Length: 169
Image 1 (tube, rainbow, N blue to C red):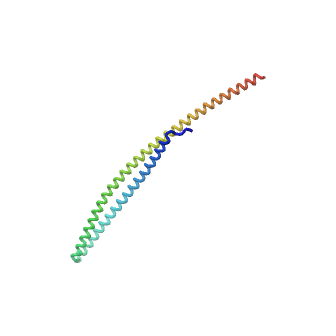
Image 2: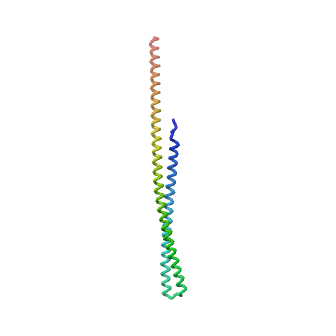
């Protein structure tokens, strides 16, 4: 059987599909990791807010109980630091939302490339199937032609053989 002349191109398309598939999987993984980090940052921010609320509540109860002035400053500084931490977390969350958006775009791009690679591979596979069908049909026609010729030769030989047998009698 003849060798498919576009086999190298078919192999390249198969590799492209595999690469696109891998890239899509990596993009999805990156997106999931980015979303997980975003959830973690949001949880950390909530913990900071809860710490701030509990520290504020504790400060109010101690102030109403008559705390010394120095300790009041410590609480104020602690509350200020918690607010700064909350603002930093809010910035990190916004940055991470940007990362998530970028990852989502990456997934869309990778998915599009994967679909395109699949289509191109399907086209090449279909071309190869049609080529094989055409080749098989041509081989079948050739075999049928050879069988017809062989049948004719056998028929001619039998006819010649029977004419000789009749002529000898």
